[in-house]
Amino acid sequence: MKGVGKVFTVTVFVTLLCLIFPIIDAQGPASAPSPSSDGATIDQGVAYVLMVVALALTYIIH
Image 1: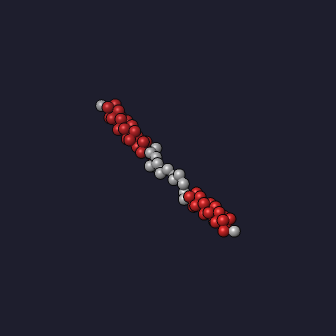
Image 2: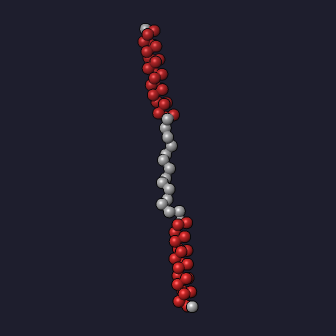
Image 3: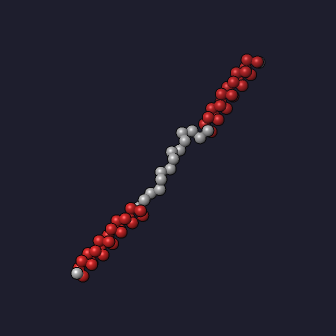
């Protein structure tokens, strides 16, 4: 009967290890993807358009 107790102990130990190792190896949730434009690109585009409009108005007025 001592052999049955050792087998039971090893079985419980292996089962606990199988339950613990996936928890240890688990990864956190994936981060959100970065935005395609951060707003600076849009601001720069608006600035270029306003500069072209200002140059055109300056050319027309003079």
